[in-house]
Image (spheres, rainbow, N blue to C red):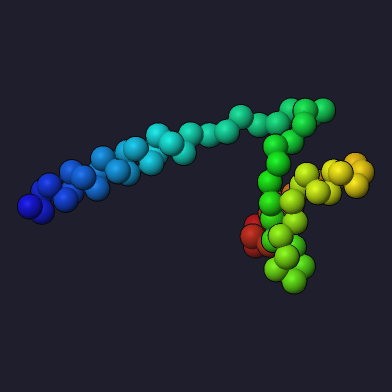
Length: 68
């Protein structure tokens, strides 16, 4: 019984790992896929709503608060 649970758990993890394949990077000049992030006041901010108002620059601070 314990072995069967282990096998099922391993299969589920393997399936999830296969579904979480890396997404190709967006190239310069290519349209970004739509996404939603949490903004000030925990309000959702959707990229498509911002681009409807005009150009948008998305900038990331990859190591801003990592202590490195």
